[in-house]
Image (tube, rainbow, N blue to C red; front, side, top):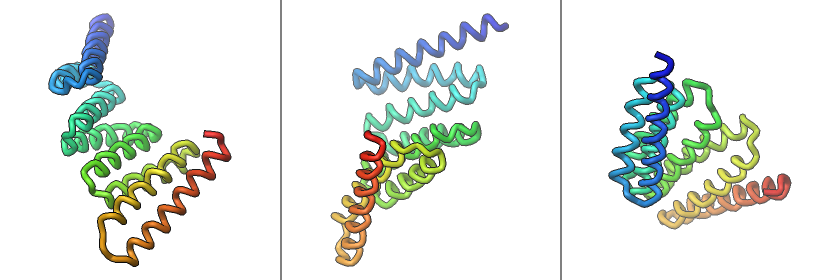
Length: 178
């Protein structure tokens, strides 16, 4: 039975790499089909980390394809599994990808919320580069949001916060030579 499980895992990995190739070639439908084959085998093997990775890969393909609602759904499933497994670095990374989807959907407020959640987690994990990136990305979302509202007081507040966040990112980048 161990030999069969090893063979199944290798087959799942082959589907993964084939999916990855199609993804890189922007053949999204084929990439999804291969990744779903990979996911099915990984679900059969019941390795939760591999299942989370398969969901992440599906989300990434859908995001690049511009199908953000599907991407969000799969990112959320991946995040939930990683959270249950206590893999908080992966959770922080997926929160950033969720923010990116919302940024692409022009839901800047939601993008800021997910970036802030990712920032908080990176701070708990003491991951300085992730902290710096999230400060910068939050600032970008705040600037985008400011461009899409008409209340001058809100615009001014957002731009002030964006400047503060950018300065935080620069400070961290200088201190840690990123």
